Length: 202
Image 1 (cartoon, rainbow, N blue to C red):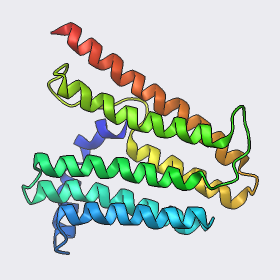
Image 2 (cartoon, rainbow, N blue to C red):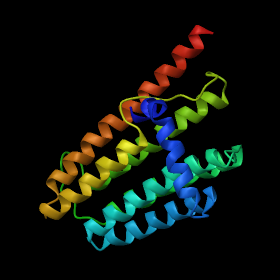
Image 3 (tube, helix red, strand yellow):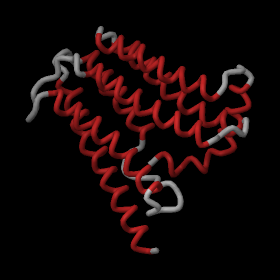
Image 4 (cartoon, helix red, strand yellow):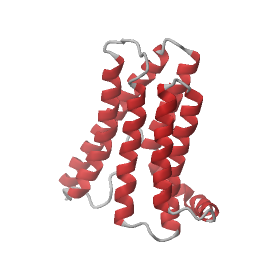
């Protein structure tokens, strides 16, 4: 849902781009920072130092947010940049969810690793159906919207990790992961439906 509201924050994004551009870090370097922060978050997840894991996961998400803003600010928002940005997002998603496989999640209908797999599947599928719709020319503009975006997914996964600090049984963490599985895969279905509907209008 957040991606549909980004138009309302264009001026704020320009200001952020000007501020962080002074650091001299290129968009591709911000992308690498995002992946590196994701790897550090993985380490802390495995060690169950969840506050540090959350901090670095959010840093990863913020670096991913900044790279696009600065790329547009420098007028280098190229196809190659967008390609590496998209690929790095999938790596970070996989890295963090891989770390959660090491947590002693309880069995709720299914083992915890099943829910993590289904969440990763939904995350990848949500991104894939968007790219596939554009590649197969079902849509002219990139598919956006749906019940949940990557930014919201990052926030909810961070909350799931935080719940691990107050509930050693990880029951509430697992319930939130199940909720994420449902809404993430529902978002993928929404985007599939949008692509089919767009094709039907042509």
